[in-house]
Length: 240
Length: 240
DNA sequence: CGTCATTTTGATTTACTTCAATGATCGTGG
DNA sequence: CCACGATCATTGAAGTAAATCAAAATGACG
Image 1 (cartoon, rainbow over the protein chains, first blue to last red):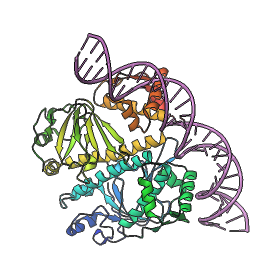
Image 2 (cartoon, helix red, strand yellow):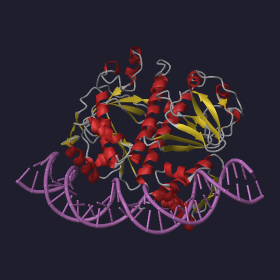
Image 3 (cartoon, rainbow over the protein chains, first blue to last red):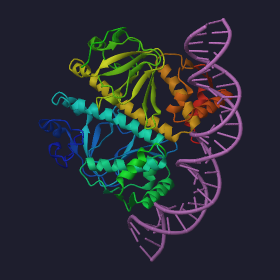
Image 4 (cartoon, rainbow over the protein chains, first blue to last red):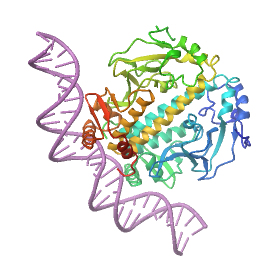
């Protein structure tokens, strides 16, 4: 069922992502229980697949470094991008119900992930009370953030969506202790457009506008945010 | 914390919704464990609130009869409708993470709900293994269906969204053992439009068109589906 | 350095909204 | 039970945000 996977990296107890990852809110003593079941897979290269639609579901994956794009194909065989996942994020939650992955996940950068064997997490509940609680909180949060994202796609203008995306990325980087006003973003305009339900042309025009305003820039994969406040106000604004 | 609530109706063991509700996949013997903690609240009248944004989260609610509208207010203080919930559906899952309800839920019809005290569900895990499993499967499904709905809002045309809505309602009624080609739908065009991210005018025009085509009608709260096949093909069609 | 993918920029189109006005339905109280 | 005001639905005309189409400019990379 869940084949043994080699451990390639440090334990949860030593992980820098404790604050944001799955195991946050667990006690220190619990990590020793969690570690033996968590497999740290060898790095994925850009373009490598973490899981694919139709794969049997055995593991949840915690992103440890790099970035993962999660997407489905619609009936026109076009990608529909569900999200971009950063270190500390858990992916694969939507596959539990059916026992089969419904989305595709690929690395956008050199990426490492921890594999959490789902069956063994259940067993671990006996030894680590609160593990399932944490799991349920995580899923509740995922339900909510899905709703919020859907609301953004439908209620905000193209410009607000773009601004919101960069603010949200920035705040995620900050939560993870990285530089949040200047960071590398290794995704294509095409993918960002897809995620925000826009065209690449529209994204380009909007970025040009933000650049002219001196609010932010995104050139050569490198994002620089100059006027966080302005972007914020713009996203919150009631009138487009 | 979780005040005692009076029981107004039958037990889970006798409930007709076992197949679709939370407790599906539990064993018969487990219902006796579940029953004492589940409170069957007195009926809500049309317009009554089941929970509101900002309420402390203590219970999940299983709709037992009637219909519940779940919505939030955006920054313009307009409703953003998250969904319409039928008997067997569980609402409130998105509030677990924060411990506070983030949406509003109101009855659209005379409605009865079962209140599931969340804290006690956790305790019950010891006696009813598989309860948390079922909970997690339910939440996984909710994550997925949220994604699917978001995809529909962004990828489908207005006409496809309307057709899809009625097909989806029809299939839900069928899954619950009700008549699925003719049913009462006590919601406003305005609310349907809101849910599908359209205007009431657009919904009206589209319903007129479907009526002229002889595919379906919705008059005086009563839905009749005449050409399920045509509606299906239309929703699936790659070209709008 | 040349090729191919990506991004940018401009002109045009379109699906849906907004605005406006009329007609149907609901509910309430006499 | 009917009348009347309010809410809701329909229909048409005009407007608009973003898509699409087309083409040039820039960048990535063997």
